[in-house]
Length: 205
Image 1: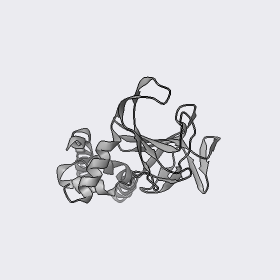
Image 2 (image 1 turned 90 degrees about the vertical axis):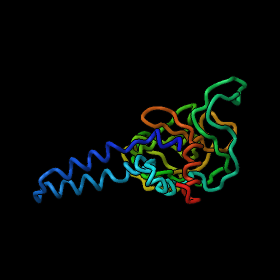
Image 3 (image 1 turned 30 degrees about the horizontal axis):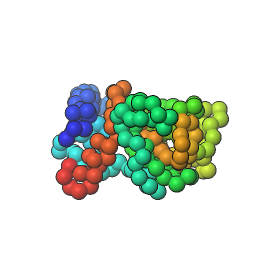
């Protein structure tokens, strides 16, 4: 599977071997339990690529609740203003104000407010960063707000948690979510991940 080459989890195995090798005095044991609790949610996307654990991909959540179609795919495209340009994500159309859910549990790395992405979030899950752009709502003092949602950098989010609503902020000609993904700093086509999730749900791992 193409994603498997992108997501080695040898470092998490190595970490486990080193932890097992420590002498488990009570204070050390308590510290290790705390460390494991903090790391587990952000290591899962790496583990998902392991062949025998491919079904873990079914844990991912499609980010748009009211899906209306894909309007622009990953790669080179003719942009809305007629220029040929790279497009580092997948545009998912949805009605204005549709709920957006977090693809995978992780930590908010950045809250965006600029003229391209508009209002957006960057969430880190292990070696992955997933990016959500063109949200509705507002950003003030580094906090994104939309309805009941309030999100700031450093905040931990659960898989599937409501993180915002579809809007037209930034460089957008209609309501949609721009969903981007980086692995170890390299852009990745989110459609590859969606296909892996679909295969896992069909029992093909």
